[in-house]
Amino acid sequence: MTATYPRYALRVACPSIRGVTAAIATYLSANGCNISDSAQFDDDDTGRYFMRISFQPEEGHTLEQLREGFKPIADKFEANAEFFDETKKKKVILMVSRFGHCLNDLLYRWRIGALPIDIVSVISNHMDYQRVVMNHDIPFHCINVTKDNKPEAEAKQTKIVEDSGAELIVLARYMQVLSDEMCRKMSGRIINIHHSFLPSFKGANPYKQAFERGVKLIGATSHYVTADLDEGPIIEQDIVRVTHAQSGEDYVSLGRDVESQVLARAIHAHIHGRVFINGNKTVVFPASPGSFASELMG
Image 1 (cartoon, rainbow, N blue to C red):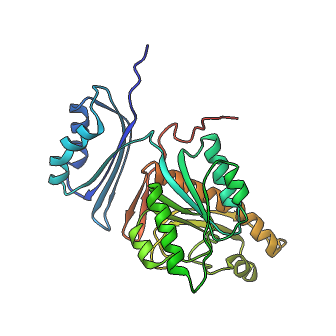
Image 2 (cartoon, helix red, strand yellow; image 1 turned 30 degrees about the vertical axis):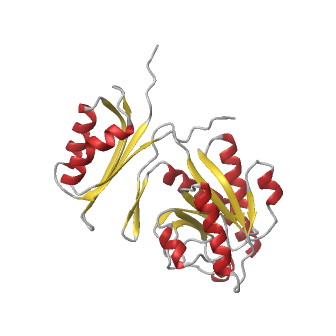
């Protein structure tokens, strides 16, 4: 019988220094770990080095033991290092307003295991999707947001995040601007889907802008949320071709499909530790073999 080992991963970000790759590989090998997948990138522009490694601890070392033993190497290379269990699902909160295509897509992917996350709550400023969410046995919170009650509403949202232990917030077409304080508090842990191919068309109705300009490509952008509206580091983008024969309504319908796919791919990259924020940009490594497989394959 073939032995089954835990699936661990290591993320490293540090200044670009000769020998860091060898030091990491040597450390893992010396501690009985078998590397199954590895990706690295050396950014000449920022002088930063990024690495992600999947491995199996074949001699029984725990995550805590590996973290502790790695500290001298992290100190030597001034590295931010994160060891984690690839099989542990991240706790995620979804936020939505009145457009439910991204929400429904994420719920389906979650249900069949294609998106291995633990959806701990859905927050909305409308009641439209209460039944859909509760039918999935997921807590639903409707928090109305107005100009007058925004601080109080966001305090309620923050309490839900803290009480649930959520590690990631996904704005699945949530049409309210988050405060600067919340963006800073959850920096690198809020993902948004913008319904256009940033930075070309911004605001509330980018498809209308695109239609009026007669563009031939429309798309969607998923990015981390920062205090600068729609300016956060981009994680994932995609496009669909349109022609002069399409109506403005066609743009919206085609765009919804792209939005759903792009948001799901961005979440997938984040939860597997494949995304590194690199200044105003991101480094996004390819998915490890098998990470797209669903528990319920059709």
